[in-house]
Amino acid sequence: MMTKPKYWPTVITSDNYPEFMARCSGRMVRKGQDMAGYFLEKPNPETVIYEVYEAECIGNNCSAITILKPGKVGKEYYMTKGHFHEDDESGETYFCLKGRGIVIMQTRDGRTDEVWLVPGTVACIPPGWAHRTVNVGKEDFVMLAIFPVNAGHDYKSIEKSGFIKRVIEKNGKPQVI
Ligand code: S6P
Ligand code: ZN
Image 1 (cartoon, rainbow, N blue to C red):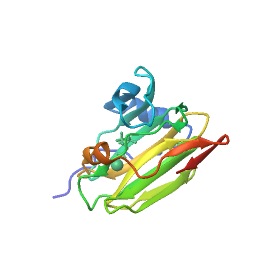
Image 2: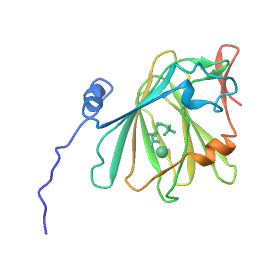
Image 3: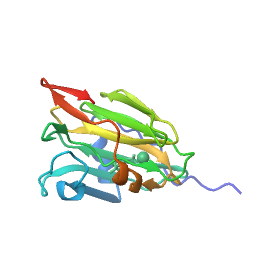
Image 4: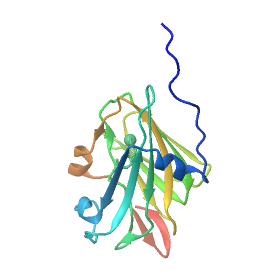
């Protein structure tokens, strides 16, 4: 049986993404106090590191905008917690809308890779790769994520073992170590 489409097509750009955020039903704020143990040094508990705006999933597709603040904890740039997807078949796509960032990725068997993002650049995260975003710029880093509805989020594995690579400032520049 044919059902009447419920949604209109949408365009999201570097200029109009706040309109998308305004329509989002979910908003999550991560402060330093939520990220104890993630950075090499202790973050200020009250400092906002990032915010995530989640839209209602449409069919099989979920979308979210992450606003990652500029700044460092010691020499380490602000970053997201990072996670694997619970579903091993679910990848993800990150579209950079603003700023300058790095997506750090790794597999459960220890392979690592990273993708540098600026507006107009897209990171394709294959299934089975954990992903974390790092803001290495001086302004907000904003990206749109599209992922399958059944992806699920496994934060525990990263909480336990962390990422193999970190992004720190060395001689005034970001360096993946
Ligand atoms: C969801 C997607 C993003 C992140 C967001 C925050 O699959 O990867 O929307 O949730 O960037 O990162 P994290 O690691 O705290 O979920
Ligand atoms: Zn994800």
